[in-house]
Image 1: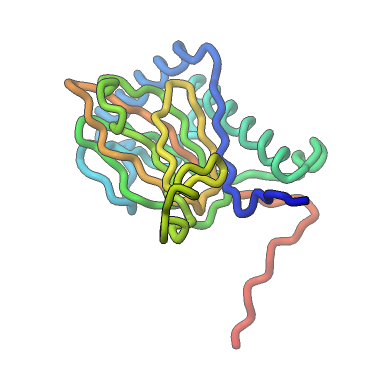
Image 2 (image 1 turned 180 degrees about the vertical axis):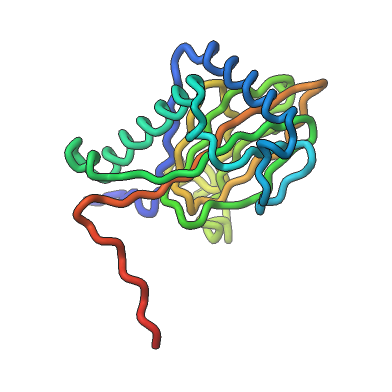
Length: 228
């Protein structure tokens, strides 16, 4: 008798917001208006490598008093809580004791824009919501959110006995072309990047990103290490 164990798997969640066209149109209009005002809404201290073709907002988006932002935020966070409960085996009563802190922002990417490899320290879960990606349908490699395999050693030697393994045992990175209304949730430690956005003409890619961390009622925070 033998057993295959799913060891060291990384949970990546995808969810789709139904009937999202009206909401995404409102978000698109709002974000483009904010971008046009330049530094007023821009992130004043970006740290991840990008170029001039990508606009990044300040990290306060989920706190904005705008109905479209609130609806999108509620969808993202409700999905996050649902899957945290599923992955950890938490019932509703336990989830109600789990309190969230977050930072959130939007990206507007035009031709040639990209986002370098990074992760999100000091957070446990991150997410990306797609408002739109248009004009680059001819190029399957354009503007893809790519998760970098944390098991780089698994490509040390590849032959016909290992190169075609099925998920979750597959080799290499995981590229994803986001669709409007699609949400992707992933552990914040997981390295990821966005490949160069290459529309034919004046295409546009708009996404919302967020990072989260949690505390639970009745569970004290870990103590800092004592000095030697």
